[in-house]
Length: 484
Ligand code: SF4
Image (cartoon, rainbow, N blue to C red; front, side, top):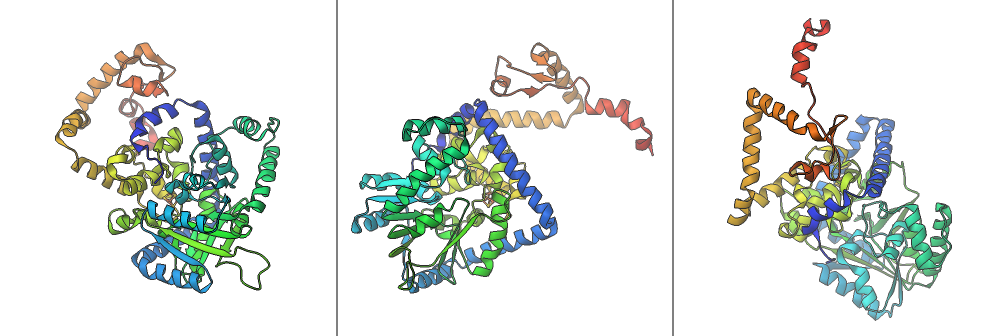
């Protein structure tokens, strides 16, 4: 398994929230993708959109209920087409399977198209330890590989980088002159990677979907690199989570409508590649070997859990990230592992253990926006609450004592909200105390905790001079249209 740093969420998010460039990038990409998603819903009409979502959800739930049947069917069909299916119960087994294929075939160079599972396994390090040169070929993945970083978004892995940073990186690592022309930078990457596609022995891809009835691996991309990875090298390894299987091509049609619209707001991605086995005798090109590695790595545990199994319906579109107020402030790296955002806050504790990811279920305002945006209607807030409940139930006496302050605070808040006189008194005191730091309706840089924890990285709206109740009593309740 790749290095897990989820314990550091609080520290990492405190740092990233103070990075204005990251916040600008997150806002630009998040709001851009989300606005495009919403436009698509209007275009197809909200009624039709809801029907598609419901259909997609039913397909996923149906498949999860019969996962063993569909995995068997998939294995049969892939084998009939000349491919080989490998089941890996955990990360160690998956890495051993890939290592054996690499060593048996004396692989020297590998090209990869985007695969979250390979990030989950830390596959690049394994390949490099075997002496294999590895090249990520999705442009965003290539950039972060050169930078020695990890993806920060499910569909836009390098969104945290500015074009100036990419230009410097290319100048430093590829020896090309710096430029601010994005197309020129993309051309440089294309020229480098084109050679690697031609030289590589092995292509590694993930899969967006696996169609059981035809034994087909489906990759949805905008760059065409997936197509080259799966067809140019002499060996192709598809590596993905076992939950990616769906029953039929007819079912695939539903997801082809939903996924690009939810991810980037496109009606359809530029490339939809379908791979069924290695090259046949009549084919002009294609790999000589096709291996499909289906990874469990904690997914069976998730499947057995009635409260969390719904998370396996995820199609990794990133819509919940683009709309999440927490992700939009802290970015993907703060989540400490492969899967960021609301879905990461559920999946990471479920796959790595709640003990190592205890901050993540709390990294949510529970506003419910993720559930509304999700194309498969995953109830993320419910699962986050469930994980919080598990955390509370698993606390040892020392933790309980530490959490006593939080409980006291909640009780005090509840008491105050139930007593208008107390609330009014607290508001009056607050208004006096806030005066030294108030500026144009905001509090900036309060020097002492607890408010300083908030204001050191963003402003806090100050207590208004007049409350809504005041305005209501003195003005609105007497307005003619209210008096009716
Ligand atoms: S949980 Fe839903 S919205 Fe989030 S990535 Fe998965 S499918 Fe997309």
